Length: 529
Image (tube, rainbow, N blue to C red; front, side, top):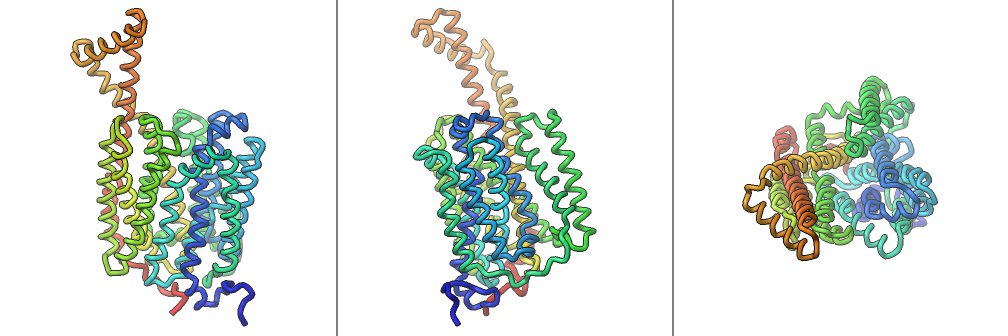
């Protein structure tokens, strides 16, 4: 007897699952794009939110912080929750919570209300990525896994880059609540499609006991770590008692959590899978890959808007080709893997392309134009796209099918934390390097420097022509030179940071020696044939 809904699947209906595998891939990728989009989409609407809600800049940052903290708490336990409620039920529940919370965020009438619903939205969104990835590992046979991960990777790469572009356009065209309302039709469509097409896991194990203490320790450890990373630069790191408190709470929470998970008979996160050197090496690599991805997405808009003078929408449009290039590179990597090209070779090639792109970023100046940005940004996307998908396959290649939900939760948590650490380090180093570069430039600004004297004379005469007295014209000339020095110092800081992230990926390549499996060969993952 045929089901009432044509695509409705049962977890045992292997032929139907295989036949609809690409539809399932598109559905779960859509859910991931929605989740990642909301990580960055609110940033461009911050000034509008401040005006509507009567909040200061420091207060409004909690709208972003609340979402990310909730995300990282849920990510590592998504495998446990998927096993507890059933994968399809948990995925559908996550989308429902995310969509309802999006509506509530748009309707929020105060900052406290908005922050609360952003926490709820983050809790719903946190389970989407890892659960989606685990679904693909079970739905697709091993020989097609590269294609599945290419589709999934498009969403992972495209989502963060699309946020500023979409957010800027929506905010300028309508108003900031619509950055949340846009999730409603897409979330509703994803929910229906999940219930119709996505199967439950064939490897679900009954939960004997729930480790509530472990859950509490994880929430404390990961949550306070994320808070420390988000607010560290603003509060001058460990000179602040708040940051010091976060650091202590994070260390104690994570230390006790690890001990608890290794000793408890039914852990919510199985850390024992990290005994696999290939998986652990992949986690280290993806941590720095996440840092490179999110940090360069963070740094370039700051550079473009601060030094070049672009607005958020213009910056988003400039970044968009990079996201498209990453999405384009992933199917190419999948094709190469399918034709027997070693994953290691593809990763090394991607790292080399990314390094070359960062060298192009290193050469940016305060006078760079859109034409100067195009190829370095395009190559950045291609390089990351070539690295992401083969690395994903190598990292999870030897994990048993029943541990895939747990492993993907850890994998995505590490990438998210890598991004947070990378952004925190970028923001801190940007300030520190700017001070160092400024000091170096100022050393050359002495009166016996002919270029300095000539520039000072030109500026002084310029202000005198505008009616200023000599003394005031001189002061303004010095102020203008100081402004130019600060601008050049910041540019040099950006230049060094771009190069640093390129080198960091290349320095990780020796980890590939511990990752010898060319494709995922874990048995029991094929649902058809």
